[in-house]
Length: 409
Image (tube, rainbow, N blue to C red; front, top):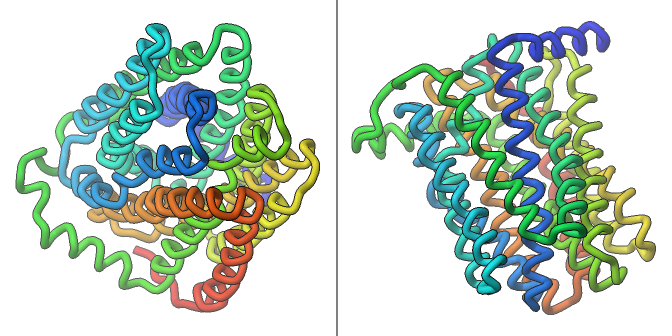
């Protein structure tokens, strides 16, 4: 059965619409991860403190807390082609500005953080539309496989993006990584315009933001105990375990006295783990209950955070980040597949927005709080505290979540 499920999953890559979307998304995410490696290293090079590093990550993720439900309403009632084209084009200008600031030697930490805020706002408004693409171009029974394949390309980009950033940062400088990021937006915007139908289920007018409709969709999702448990699991992972990745450059530079190349290697290791985790999900029977997978791997991620905090060897960090990538991807993708395959079509955008709120909003809050605890306790003690709390919370939540009734739309 695993081999059969794997083959059926791979067949989606041979379809014209999904295959083209998958490849364009891969290119876009390679650029994104190149920037995700270059940007914290740029801040540290400018003399920014670990707190400012956490503040930059907070600025990138905080808009999700306020705007992702609006983004979900846009995805359900607006023209997804226009939403993606407009907001991704604005987002593309941010790395362009960073290149200009670097070449003119005018870049300051506050400028980097301000541009992260712009990216965060556009991401919050457009990401539910992006996340809704896969369920709209595959059959309902193919949704878990489509999400797993999409997660595979995302984690493949986590290997290729940091690797490209490392080469560019060493050879031509930080501006090279930001240039790759800017160029990577173009193929995805063009493919989104081609693959998505013109128009939508509504307009981008004021009616799209009907407050009663918005909250009705939210209530319908969170009313289901199984779906509510998925959102809480993702939130705990994002807020307590994911800061391991955000503060890896601090571990590399301050604890192990490493270089930019070593940091890019560590980030590529995280991507490799994510790729392994996503590939493993392709072998899972689409009808299998994803809750035990999600909660067990969430607890495993917390254990990895504890081990990373106690790890005394520079070579141990990439090895642990491989395990972190496996655990995070398996947990979050399983929760996402459960949410999207269970939710009704009319509220799929809102369901995605809640998933993004739990993941990206949780990361924003977790990075800000962890940045403060790193400043007070040091990076290793802060991560140790995060890991212990995450493990206890995931074990407590998991016991109730997997026993909740599950109703499919």
